[in-house]
Image (cartoon, rainbow, N blue to C red; front, side, top):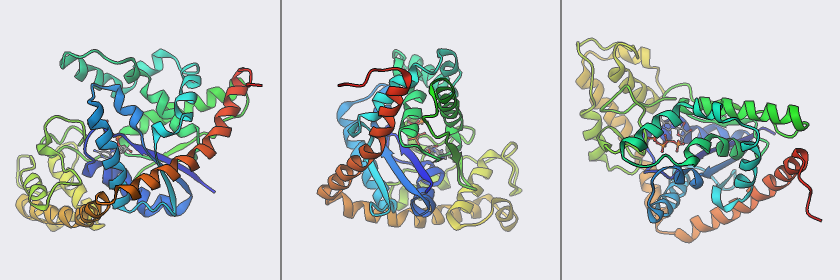
Length: 332
Ligand code: AQP
């Protein structure tokens, strides 16, 4: 059976980008297709300046939102990364497999280290090693498929390289995984700056639709989206990135095709209005279910506890095998 792993960082409130790029596929496809594990990867939230109480709050909120989006604990395993020690254990072995050169080439490291320096903060060593921990998240479960948005492609490539290198040096230990992504909206852009990704840790939320935004807020953000000069509605990511982003959103929310949708609209305003309505309807059930689940934290705790137990049961033997393969003496 195909083993599937993916995660979301509690670095901010979950966005429409997280939902369309990853979570919706986990719900509609992945949890039905294989043995799927999904994690709130909280250790990754410590790679940048953080407030401990906020990370805790956002971790619970992310887990609740994943359930509200439709992850079913009967079909998949949902857990918090820090509840399963194997991630950190394996990460060290993979740090002994990776080189600092390949980590310094990671685009997210370059971007986020610049952001940290601009904010007058030190660049945490864990920001550099973050993709190694992500590789450990994936490899600890013998993962075949990693459903992620486009921004994670480079990290999954690194994971593959590390798995292959480890296997070659120390004997076959890890499955070499591959990334999978949705057909539309694999990269949702910021509504106020359509040349950059809609990211949950960005300071200015005006261009970001959060899953918990109320209907009026979603409408306002979509109606105020930056669009391109001219009047013709065409789908061209290079020439009209703002319009292309709206067409992608409309297509993803209604199951259409962005190029075909471009032919349907005669004005930017009409496209914006329909996109706003479609996104509101898309998120409505998630928001409503979140409110119900948030009122029952005991249920969420139980799902996470049972999920961590199941995850441990899969990861521990595999990570133990990696410890032996690399040359560490097993405890007597
Ligand atoms: N804009 C996006 N479009 C499509 N997919 C996206 N994903 C994230 N943003 C978009 C996918 O969502 C999953 C979980 O993402 P994450 O928590 O690892 O990353 P993030 O939301 O981008 O959070 P950051 O890194 O804290 O935010 P920024 O980038 O603003 O600094 C992943 O599968 C991701 O591909």
